[in-house]
Amino acid sequence: MISATDVPAQSPTNVAILGATGSIGTNTLDVIAQSPDRLRAAGISAHSRLPQAIEQAWKFRPRWVVATDPQAVAAWRATSSELPPETELLTGADEVARMVSQPEIDVVVAAIVGIAGLQGTWAALEAGKRVALANKETLVVAGPLVMALAAERQTQIAPVDSEHSAIWQALRSGRKSEVRRVILTASGGPCRDFSPAQLAEVTIEQALNHPTWAMGKKITIDSATMMNKALEIIEARWLFDLQPDQIQVVIHPQSIVHSLVEFRDGSVMAQLSPPDMKLPIQYALEYPQRHEGVSERMDWSRSHHLDFHPPDPERFPAIPLGLEVASAGGTAGVVVNAANEVAVAEFLAGRTRFNQIVAACRAVLENHNFDPNPTLSDLDRLDRWARQEVLRWTLA
Ligand code: NAD
Ligand code: MG
Image 1 (spheres, rainbow, N blue to C red):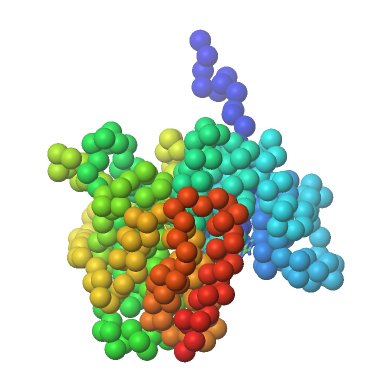
Image 2: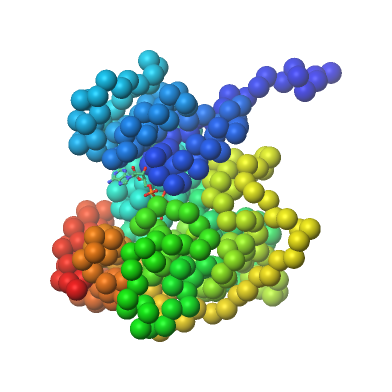
């Protein structure tokens, strides 16, 4: 008879984390730190915050650190700080692709912000790696191409975005053909109850003051404009192969119900947990298994109050914009994403007003030459075009 102690311990899953110094990246390392027997940080990438990645390397002892920002590399070389002896430094954005395709890597966490995350995600899928996807912009820009590549390489994209993780979990209760619709929850962000006049005057500090989630700056501004929910509608469309009319948004200020799936008999399955990204990260890394969690738990010994109400499309035009882009497909996603990335950066630099962000995205969408079946190089060209074009619409 074989006892449990005779079973050889499985070697840990080797994880590459793209964007290790960000909010998702550091949460991923927290999850890995709690499960050293099951998970190992085998490779990490960082952009401007290279010194932070060096510190992470001393703690997690990865095989590779990829530094994608040449200025940060030059600044670091001027210091006397060193990497652990077993860690190799790879420099330049192209090295991300080389790292993720190493045979040693089992799963790649795509946690770079913006379209800059597409290259590494694409390379990981091409190499047949499982991808834990936080970088929603990848699917917004190139959803059909990315999903086709994953299918061709017979690999899995595991959502990290909390709403999509919730849907993924709830979908396990029925068949795809039995799904009537999915309902994405949105906290509504810090400007949820603002009047149109107040929305015209939102300051950078107000927009960065998210009521329930602590995240990177870009997604925090996206949450305030509700563009984050627009991006998530598009993400859900491609990730779960849904029709746009199967996707609905509901405001849920407490951020406890992370999304819902309604089946055709009327049954609605929800996933609940306190707002903490470590749970969807752990689920994506260890799917289909569930292990002891590192996240805070619901306290059912006290009262809870959960609200749900419909979003106001007049005050938050990002929601209808997201549904429209999800319906259009083709090149609609790439131009809206690029316009939004630049408009958010302009807002954070104090050069445009809060309520111009979504309006500028719509203007760029309406001014572009729509193509229903773009190639990757078409997407790249339109991304660069939209980054210029949006500046005509963000002038204060
Ligand atoms: P962040 O700004 O905190 O971190 C971004 C990471 O990307 C950093 O490690 C940075 O070094 C790296 N990076 C930035 N620009 C780069 C470039 N040009 N090339 C290579 N690397 C670059 O962002 P975040 O909040 O962790 O979000 C990361 C992604 O996850 C985004 O796509 C976001 O929408 C998504 N997401 C985040 C959360 C969250 O809770 N933070 C939740 C759901 C989805
Ligand atoms: Mg989300």
